[in-house]
Length: 430
Ligand code: PMP
Image (cartoon, rainbow, N blue to C red; front, side, top):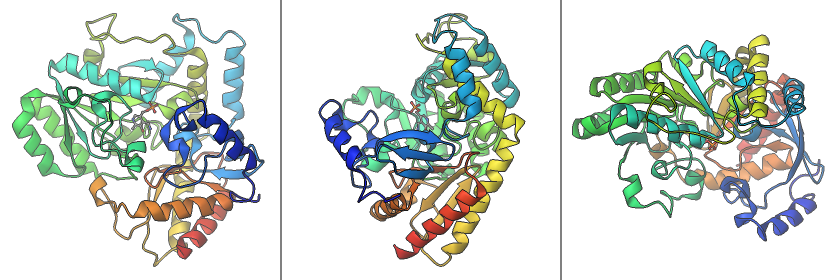
């Protein structure tokens, strides 16, 4: 392992070539490494907790494809499920058994889900859930929180996190103001702001959508009380509460944040883990709401590859493995141990490490944050240094100060102890 500066020859050549055929050389902006400097690294293969680039550098991976790979890379159980399914064909565009199996599994893990529909991405899941909320309530407005990212649908690119936080784009060009005019925005963890908005627009609000574990603008953990307040105020005004569990679903607990906090949303959206590394999203909730979807009701939603057999096989295998191997409990224990080791090593440094389940975030400031507005933008520059030094020591962190880290069941306690030590050395030298 020689590290970023000395041995990324092939990656650099590939990047120059990619720039000629794709905007910015990438298919999703954060992959361009703009926020951390340097050229993106071309990964060739993954095994367990590690990924290897085309120059044969091997890294302990804390990105996990941005969350889906809760079992790590090329997990044998998931690979077997994909291969066995692929041998029978890749897509039929018809109903098939894996849909029933995964839907039943989700209903068991998430008792608040009566009916679920599969789509191909988190973005689609959220767009569809919001359409359902609007159709059900016959209202137009939605309330979201600044720093929460819900995919790239036009009307949700308002005060969003993720790549937008990194790039400092307040919203996006190409979104007509008219499309965003029904989107209201409040800061996280602020009951007064939400009360004021409901007092003014209460009768027009179809839904409040929140990442119950906000993880796209750092990890801005909310209190159970706050989520419970949102549950109450939405009920009071006849609006729906949507939990966007694309990151937290099947990650922070078998039943996601709804189970973790013991709060039942009307609708929930899923992605990432539920597809085991293949493109899957899902949205679901109470039967009386979901039954408004076509073909039962008037709300249209469809997809050529929705519920793709390969993707659902990967998701099913992932959830079954976690269930059969006490996965969530072990992940939480090992992540907590890792974070505690790191915190101990960097005691006295002006840095916060936040964690929930198998998610963590290194916040390069002394103050904790529960709203996007509490993060010092100057941290992003320091993070670039941390990222590049970690890379040269064989640790692949997210290429953005605002993205969280994910631990998989393939990360051994020894891998994590070693990473905590290396990260501590870097942080102390910042
Ligand atoms: N919602 C949340 C909470 C997310 O984190 C993401 C993606 N990071 C999305 C929605 C969009 O999912 P996708 O990228 O699969 O469209």
